[in-house]
Amino acid sequence: MGREIIYLPETASTQTTAMDMARKGSQEGTLVITGKQTEGHGRLKRLWVSPQGNIYMSLILRPNQNQLSRLIMAASLAVSFAIENTTGLIGELKWPNDILIDGKKVCGMLVENDIRDGQVNFSTVGLGINVNTDMQSYPELKGIATSLINHTGKPVSCEKLIVSFLHEFERLYLGLNEYGECIFEMWRKRLITLGKEVDVTSGKDTYRGIVESVVPDGSLKIRLADGNLVHIVAGDVSLRHA
Ligand code: BTN
Image 1 (tube, rainbow, N blue to C red):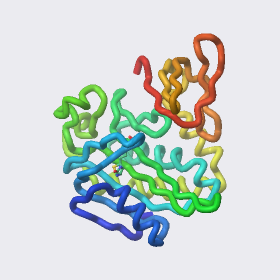
Image 2: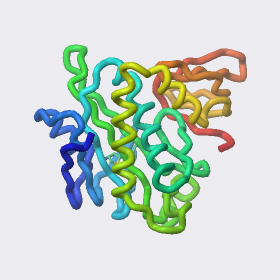
Image 3: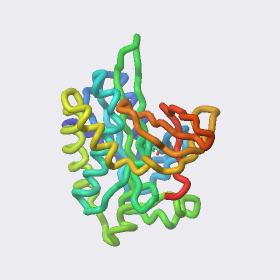
């Protein structure tokens, strides 16, 4: 992973650049990094605030079926381990692919797949990690986002964090072929969403209930107040009491 690294001092979005490169045939493991994004975006086309000082990167992958089904688990764990290795802080995982510290978002992840004739042509894993920006200075993100420096009180090396992520991710991603169940278990154990009362939006539907279990494919089972169980494959979850 990261044997080919494209560094752009500033770009619209590493995700858009990486997807263009993947379409043109860039190899698995190619990493696009930038210092600053002008059109950083997240899931559901939300704006991703992208000033200088943080990590914005997108990794091109060409996963097989085993790897595709648990890509988010491997990437989330790798970010969480890299944060711990570099700062000693524990990043908690919030379904489906957010990483929180103290209940606030420190990392967001955007996984996009290009499927051709039922086969994965490529996937891009876009990561935004708030590292050295004081996220409290953004009124619209107050109480929602945090950064590593907000917890360490001193600057954190983006380079060390990226190297650690690539190392951890390569190990987990390759391991998905043989040890997928184990990686699922590690992910499940760090998932703070389990057992919590949540509001879920999935397509046009919204639900409130308790997260009862997480299925090995990464989907959630939620027990509603009326006793019914709903199965959520994709959606947005907010914890009612973080
Ligand atoms: C989310 O939480 O909704 C996902 C945020 C993903 C942001 C990253 S930053 C690098 C890459 N480029 C983008 O435009 N988005 C992703």
